[in-house]
Image (cartoon, rainbow, N blue to C red):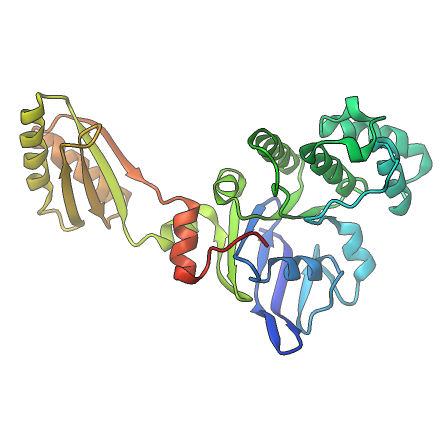
Length: 327
């Protein structure tokens, strides 16, 4: 798969402080790439280098095949950047705001009216065309800023903490909009501390701490690699309370001899009562485990793996030192 972003040993120092330490990053075309890290991890520094707003101290970075140091103009044509702070001018309508930036991007005058109308419709702000920008809600400002990043039709969108300060409804609207942009062929790099939101929208993630990239890849692969074993939840056909405890104990004993079963716990007091099985086998072995339960006369009503969520993976990768406030 073609990489839209590639860095090789990308390094940035601020005096004696090492903000990025030989970062090797690859973002495939069409991905929604979640860039995760605690305060001071190097997320914003990386994004500012990729948008040519900051020069690296060492190493190199390429965006859509263009060097961020030697082909700055080409990189800027390829990138739409949305910083974490929404800067606007007083006494300017939403349409005037987009017209100003369309001129800055050298969008031909004849195309501007139609383009601005299409973008306002895309971000569902057509009804706010003549509204004062400063009077818009935080969520509307974020959507207007996103429309601005699209004016020159970039292949890559770099969004620094776009969900910061948004209420739950606005976050859902933003998430759906980003999914729509991916369908339209955009590649999106997004940093955020709202990890549950990233898990629902991202196809790939990178975890960075203290300038070091700790993990990077598609979400499913990272989840699998960072989870040493799976936990299966097994529910059985309802019995009386006393009978359920006996049934769970018998089922637990039945699976203990399986070579892939690390541990098994009967939990009759939980709601609903169930077994938890720590299991290190593959899908074929999981299928055989279920078959052995059924062959043993256990009446299974639910058999499913409990996937780790993104927060658990993040904490496991970074250890106890990481998850701070927003950056």
